[in-house]
Length: 154
Image 1 (cartoon, one colour):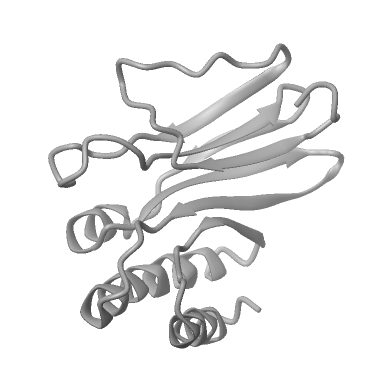
Image 2: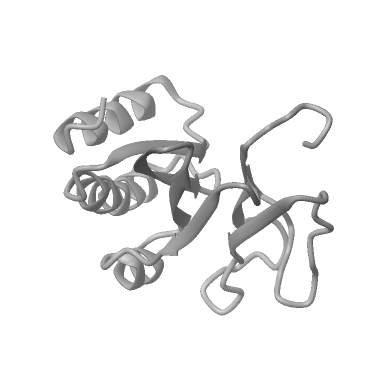
């Protein structure tokens, strides 16, 4: 990151948990969400993180819908409020959705994403959403696009 002069980096499927740490590149901070092993049938993979240069301020944002999203879907998310560069704060969300193409699973996860997107939009801040949505089927992309449009995030 340091050699490439990257200010913000979102990482999904980081394979980290509370016992494992991420060796940070000097001058960078991290906010992260580790896979909840009690809710997951998988014990590896998952997890999301946002790394930022420490010249910027990234504050963890806990979304009101977080508990519902975690209990009703497989979506993993970490959201931060980025301040710096003499501009209005920006919300950055890093999302991971495990691969599953069964329609009922996609619908369940998209409902969770709609809740996340709506809450992000209601902040009236600029929003950047990055991550791995694992939408390998053409029909699933249109469902995600509809969720973004529904929340006025296009």
